[in-house]
Image (cartoon, rainbow, N blue to C red; front, side, top):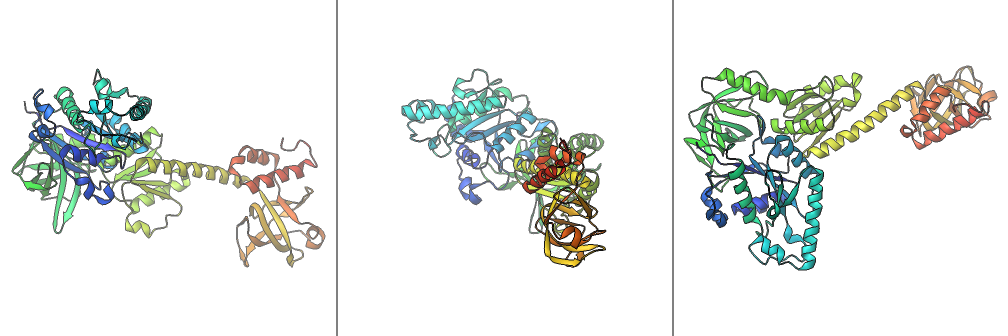
Length: 577
């Protein structure tokens, strides 16, 4: 039985110190060289067991570790973390969730927790930045001794922050404790206070994930007979195109033929032209004849057309029909959609699955999903929603871009929302849908009737009668043609025949507009000259509907509605009650 390297992913909220923690474990300085100190792409680091022992000498004196090293994966925020999936759950065997002890659980932390729970990925928490606690001093290499030797007020602050976080994690369904108080690692979530800056707690963190991998993941780490992996990214350098991937099971040879899943029935079948493996504690690759899981690889493929990020691949052993069936089951569950709903796009299969999982939790329906840029077909699909399902005429793009051809299309009537952070994207979607529902309801109400208050502009009289044509200003609401008008005594005046703005007919006029209005069967001198204000007429039923939905009306419309009720009640006291 061969034991492979465990895959350990480091995830958490932006700027909580994921890469810095990983740098401390692998003793590199990647974080300082990255743009703005924020990870720009997924990176993997292969750490052989000798280096693990060197970094954490205490492990060498204990039980011999049976795995040959660790493959660490660092991720930008949580977004690319969702690339890390395979059939049946997460690509990662174990996760280190980094939380700033002074900042607590942030929305992105919450998303990572949701994805970890969904994928049933075991994890430990690195409580980073203990050195930022006011008055904290590093006084020992031993974390427990270091905590105990802090000043009383500093220790009190530490305990307070620790208990606050334990309470927050409890609300997410976890029984969390500092690692030194955990009795059962299968039932309790271990918290390791640490500082990437001073190195405090890094030995203890290394000891924790190695110990947990040895004790609980041994069966998962048994190497299979078939090479399997996930494509992370397809890149071009000059004239060369290659795929960066993680091999999570089996042994891959440079002369193997592989199948890569697609959205079609047929996978991409290709030979490997060049196989390279990530060097230990490096971001450079070496040519390799064969590589063993788990490791980061780069492949030049003879046929790379149609290969998408997040797609699984496997070696072909005269079993292509079986592979097709496996891919169909794996991809099919992610692509399942509802009979109605919004359109979603993401940059990879894993991102799409993560977005779909979190949207399902929010009870959001999805009619169509896909990988890649938001394109012309997506816009056309969203436009077909306009008539039947206007609140779902939306395209959501997670970590993806809008195609250039879309920018030339008329997309005013549909909504395109994009973001690199799922929770922001879902927040924006919910906010937009709420506004859209209110607008649809309002339009439906205003389709039955219009609330409008208008002032007569006596200086603009264009025609006295047959019809009377004169100037008005809209003070509240909206004026449409064929709407019945009343005066301040409740007398019916006429139905609006035409509305003109700058001598051009318009179907309606809104607040602030000054326009000309024509009223058939009305004599301006006799009926209008002595009046200053007119209102639209409402039935009692219409009034009650508006009153019920007052929250959809503007302040001016509410005032106009109250005035109409006052006018009507001059003739009938119980009107609209």
